[in-house]
Image (cartoon, rainbow, N blue to C red; front, top):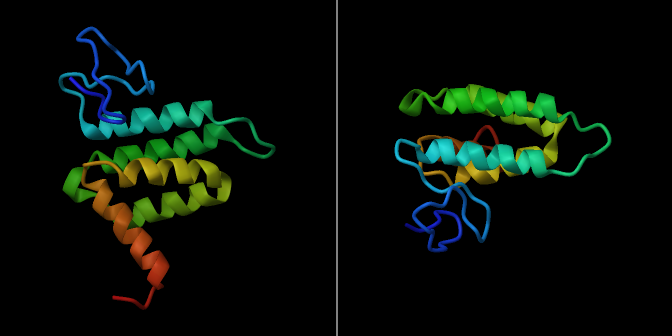
Length: 126
């Protein structure tokens, strides 16, 4: 078995990658589960900043996670609104979240890419 993040060979009993700390894949654990676990670990490891409310940021990320779990029924407008909220309350955590989600193999990847595309091109692009 190999680490899905860095490619290191994992011992059979490994719970985390010895090289990068990413959780080892578990039976029944989805890519989305691993993605959000990594996001939450990165948020927890983020250094304290004046005015940063990690608890509020984590709650927004939880809302995104719940919506992402809907698979093909994801509401892109909700995701976009939560990402904008996250940009306002914790821009660094927004970056952590978007980077993690854009690399996911789940349905949210396409939603994140579309939000990024329309943000870059503007609301009148189609």
